[in-house]
Image (tube, helix red, strand yellow):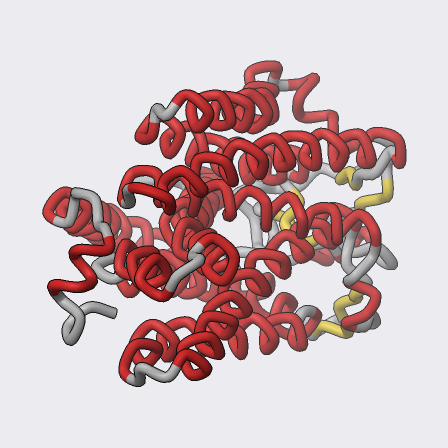
Length: 379
């Protein structure tokens, strides 16, 4: 049987895997939606783009739902703080996401160009806004969130929505947006033909280079600012899950400590930059599935970089560092995490299996002729 310490670390890894899975799969949905009004010059081209997502977008949402459920069950205090501190941002994301399913299902029900154009912009908003907000959230986590805990572990958030939109967080938001646009465009490279394919290749080439540059700028910003937090007392990793039992402080350059202590972790940012550059090269050369693979690895590298830099912190407090939530002291009980672990062993492979099967069965390219032949049934 796994001990409590091992379970805490395993769930830190599993939640990271769920976030990466969400960003890779639902990421290409959002990426396609974010370029829909610009890349599709004609109605048929836009319908081709939407129909490349048709068989998959609902299944891709499973990763978001699962990540939210896992966060609630494994890290209840993190879940509570995220929804109190980032409440307006969360509502903004949910409100934007409403446009995607409705837009997909109802856009082509009416032939009026104004109707379809309005839903195209709705799909754009439902894709671009969440992409930016997710990056902004990570940017604020790296800087620290202004909250304290009382003796009953109740959260007192002292920030505001507008404070979230600081320069570093906005850079992270643009990293996220450019990263998901690249993912969407590499998906279109594998699924479309003709002019849409050519535009997707050109856009992915530019957006992947922009992503690499912004990722490096964000890293340089962290380095120049010397950001970081550090636990200054010994934590009993097998002990009670209580954030108030430790001491911590703001520590200059602490977000770079793990790379010195565990040198192999430097592979995460290297993969993030190198694979973004390879995505640009593969897109330029017309190597479509290779571009999608390296784009997916870019996403994994970027998210892992954030996680490794902050570990063991999950949400550091900028005004009371000793109240920060970490992977060791913000978790559920040992029994809860044990049950969840075995449930995950069963159901995560099932989700992976039917997801891959769906991609296999729906493989192939779409073109204008497909839309013309399925005008009444296609999106």
